[in-house]
Length: 233
Image (tube, rainbow, N blue to C red; front, top):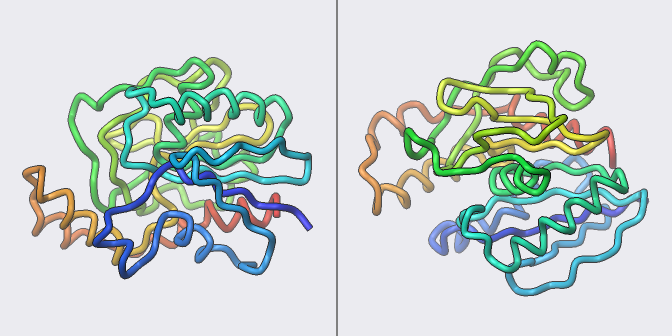
């Protein structure tokens, strides 16, 4: 039996957590086999990072933190990420994790010049995604839930860009033999997306009506998690 480690890079809003739980729970909910050995590493609470074996698999969650703030726990994760890639541990990094993966390997992460991307958006595959073991079963264009202010401006050397959209040129990429980053949220559903729009609108001027009208189901986006499970778990 393979072990799944979910690296918890942060928590959702308390108002969402009270009813819908947290990032790691949404990931687990999307898996076909929820009875496997799953270990949640709460990195912001100084949980130790284990030394992993070849049969271990890792998923990084999103976070409300910013990669460019270089908080101590985040810098610690960067070093650990390099070990995972060197040891060829299967790795899927979501949103904050996606940016951290790029940064750890020399990519450039900054605040997006056009501001926040939030809501259900269209994402498009690059041609080379058809040959990628994780993305090959996805449709050429699909709906995905997003919420991010920072972006991967430049991919690390040797990385392969897999997906993009009009807002973000690096919505997904692969590096090494088995490490992927996705800026969108394959673990979100419509309820979570709706509540994020509510919460973010308290501090940012959003077109709430339009954003909510565009919320949609994202079954193709969710396939990223299901395919990752099928391939490595």
